[in-house]
Image 1 (cartoon, rainbow, N blue to C red):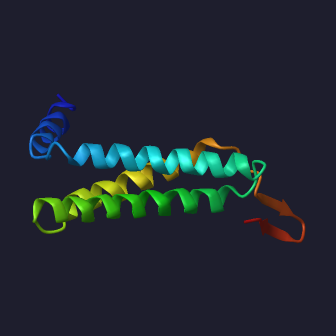
Image 2 (image 1 turned 90 degrees about the horizontal axis):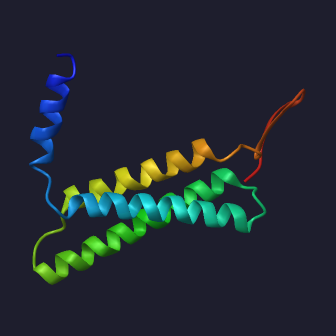
Length: 117
């Protein structure tokens, strides 16, 4: 019974989602995670934070460009719901990358904390 109301809430909200919105979220998640991974491995598995920031930024930029092109083709206004899905997907991709990849860019020494970018 504890899961009934959350499941009901989820189902009610999923029915309101446009079919295009999950594609925006999934694409941004993939772009963010893959870009972060590529840059991290290209830099010799250093610069984890910088790789995460670049991945998030690229996914957000691509999502914004796609939404601008969609708005131009449909002769409609900019869809902020799709842009929100882009930001959520890019954020989830960045969080997953940052939490899964081992942290070698932060070192704690007796002098303090050193962060390499």
